[in-house]
Image (cartoon, rainbow, N blue to C red; front, side, top):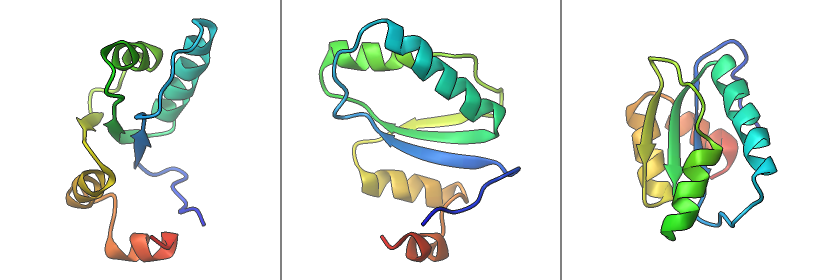
Length: 102
């Protein structure tokens, strides 16, 4: 099940802990994806970064695009921390959690 966010500010949580080294041509595709998200009102991003410093750097570079001034971001250790932040920011409620079945 997906929650509709068309035309509304939205947030996402991304688990990058399984990130693996990738060729440079992947960077532009990921940057295009990040740009699309900002063009469609992504306002809050939560990310769990990989532990390996090289993979952290590569993940950060692969998603490095101009961000709107009102964009907020947090780096978290786990899903529970992500859920708590998104709830406090008003992007997630108990009703949403039940609708998603988690």
